Image: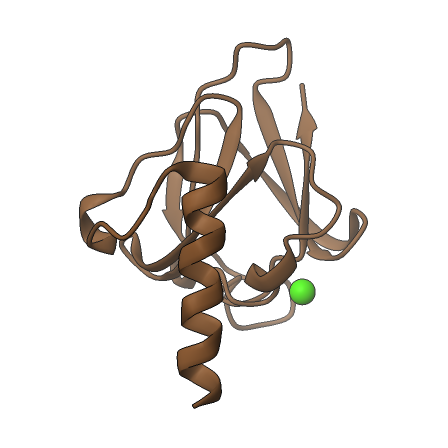
Length: 125
Ligand SMILES: [Ca+2]
C-alpha cells in the first residue's frame, strides 16, 4: 500500500518537472537542458525526477536514485557535483553535462556503490 502511494506521488512530480507524464519509464531516458534527471532503477527505469543543476535536496528521490543523466547546459556551468547528504555535504563526485551513469557502477568511498545515496547536487565549472 505504501509503495503504491509513493509511486503515485512520483508520477505526479515527474509530470510537473520533466513532462514525463505517464509514458513508460523506459521510453523516457532523456533529460532537458539545465536539468539533472534521476531514475529509481538502473537504465532509466522506474520513477523519474528532474531538477535544476543546483538542488539542495532531491526530495522524494532522496537515497533512491539508481541512474542519472545530466541535461546540456546553457550556462557557464558545465559540471554537476553530486553529494551524499542534503545541502552539498558528505562524499561527492562530479560529472559533465550530457553524461549518464548507472550509480550501481560507481564506487562509493569505503565500499559499495553510489546506488541509493545521492541527496543533493550543485552546478560546477
Ligand atoms: Ca544520502
